[in-house]
Length: 529
Image (cartoon, rainbow, N blue to C red; front, side, top):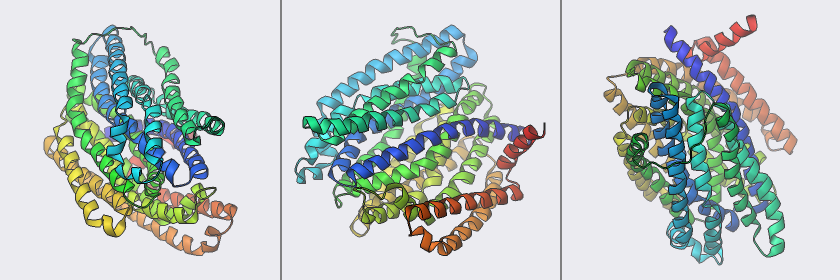
């Protein structure tokens, strides 16, 4: 029990560091989306931008935040634990060179074949004059983003494995800063030269990707890394990473297929549907980043070290504790997003070209996305366990199940729900994915402490129910303020969120959730010195 508490505190501490950095990034990301909403609203230009960014972003999910990141951390941690420093750094240099060349070639292919790719992804855009041509142009501009962001993921993996979490996590804030400052400046200048303002935002995205890579390099140098420009295709470490990546890419590809399918369905719905879905998903990514991604980044090196030492029991305890932390954070976030979706959207986006109608459409979408928040974040913990065990076939099966359920649910509901069907199917497929992976891991690892997990869930459910009741009463009591001036809306919303979070935290502390009490005990210990 003491060991579990120490492990929980270690992961929570690392995750807290990452969460602070991710919060900065996500806040800047919301500011970026506010700028998009104010300048372009939910229509032709932003629809084109979202679809154009889809191709490099999907490949980023596969390479940067998916297969490459997980496979590299697994092998690099093994080298760092069991090999010499020289061998470890030579592996890192070889990986950077290899993937730099490979992804540059992939980017050139995407640029060359942008026309058929975009027509495949959003065929219905051709029905609106100039929309498909603008989307193709934006896609060609943003595609090299893939190279910068993938190399950034390798650097992040090195730093995380060496216990450096803050700088890699804050690097994405620099991406948003580059996108905002560079993008807005160019968006104001380029129309004078006959180019659409949205082109400036596309170039800003490219600049942001370069900045995200560059800001991590000084820290990389400080931990002793020296880049050696070499390419050894027969390097056993590189071969092992590629061997892990291939099934992992296949495993992740159904998720990307889902996104392509969803984009196609969304482009066939009313104009603005692509934008509403994107704005809503951007908001739900805030808790995913703060909780799911932060805990995943913190837990991944710990899981990899347990795997390198063949400590399966330690790995299971880390996984269960991490899942409990994810549930304790995402379940109240889900309830909050569902109950406060409309005032949240109104305060953040409703200005300029973004109308009251857009607010309602986006809020309804956010509510359905929030249903799958816990599963989406939990999968960020479960999938790295399979990678640490060097077994990627089950995430592959889970992903194909998700594709099948996604297509089925959309086809059954698209006529009646329109774009809302896509948000609903995304949440349902993520929940199915989570259930499948949980069952398989239980079988594969010889069982983990389900009773511990359910005891934690029961405490979370009690505290969450009380918090939801408070929000329902508070929302009714503050109805006039929530529909009043911007200042009134902001103050009342902040009061509701802060009060509900405080109530939830106090109840969990009283109920004795170990993942929370271990952290608060350490905090009390520090202040009592």
